[in-house]
Length: 309
Image (cartoon, rainbow, N blue to C red; front, side, top):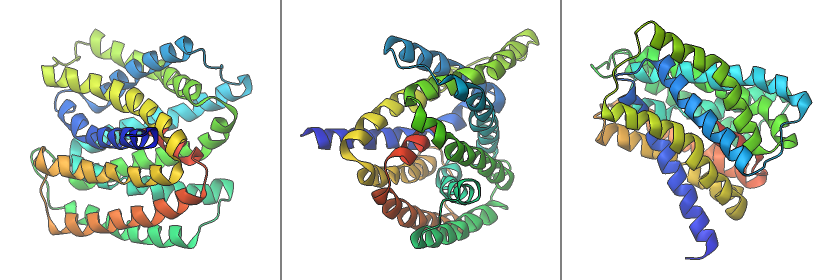
């Protein structure tokens, strides 16, 4: 296997691991409240990323960017994951995996509104198809609640709120990524979020509300902190710089597919007509919006999207 094929294989592995993260979070959320799971995940990830930055001697963040990036962290990390995990707790992991189309749609809209990025014809078509798919998926889930997903409609809406925050971070973070090292930026953003996460963890401990962790919860929390947030990040960036943006766009399509399959086959998520129709439209929209766009752009947008997972 040559280096290009090996890099692409690493990229696929990263996407498969990212795709499974919603199911892992769903298991952890059976024991851990959403805000505490967010705090534990990003506190651990922040410490690890800061150590990696120091050990690899990455350049520091530009001084003038530090405070604006700190504010962005409150949206792209803190608000995003509190909303996201609150949503996953109420809905199915497969719904969350397919609703990743929301990030594509919201990023396109915010890029147009905030930085004047134009809509291409394929992006307009993909946005339209994806919106229809998301509406079908969410509306069909309204009466499909289960014990594991007690309020799928509200959960899906909260998860979309998470994706709005991530899209805003992607658009606004682009300028910072152009001026700063990507590892340093991720370490800084995650590290700043710890000013919120650490007090939350302390509060749960002091008030006696810190839950008893099962082995599955411990492993799931560690997995979320180290695999999607650290390992997949390095697999992705190593690969994307070798095989390019077009191959990366194809690999990204594995995430919702893997997430939906894991949700249905492993987590027992219900397979309904609205889920099938919405899922097919969403996957079609991802194909339409991803491949043509990424083939013509630098991999900067892919870098920013990878930072969010």
